[in-house]
Image 1: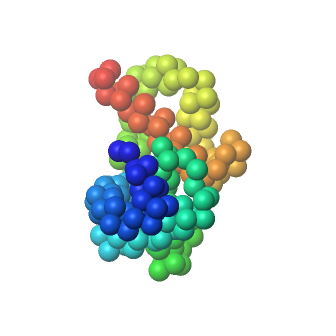
Image 2 (image 1 turned 90 degrees about the vertical axis):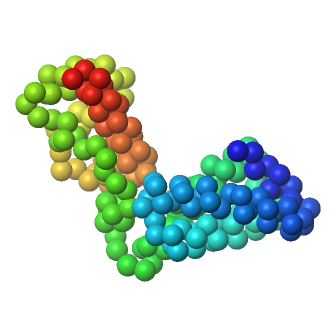
Length: 179
């Protein structure tokens, strides 16, 4: 989806065109927040509204320079806004928000049963080196929090979470195709 017209509309103060693009984009962003984060529809709308206010100001102040990356920027900003809304309302720590917002469709220990252990080992060996090191850490420290992993690998918590789930999904697909 090309949203570079949104940047042009905002810069040219074309409110009609900017509103049209916002109206077309909102359902996509709302679906993203609902599916990826389990967002309540009202919270999703609030997060999207905050995102548009933020991005429109950035565009007007000439601080947004990558028209091709605007959709990605919108998705990230919506996600951050949603997490902030939940944190502000519930005043909870990040680890709890992470556990609550993200579904865990495939957990490592769902894969590790007696029949699949050898298949899982073979699949782990097929991973590229960085992913192998990452999953071996989880096998060695199954109760490690995402924050622990981030510190161990010197990466951000979000990056640790993303890598963890990429590796788990790769292992899940491999095990599934070999059983």
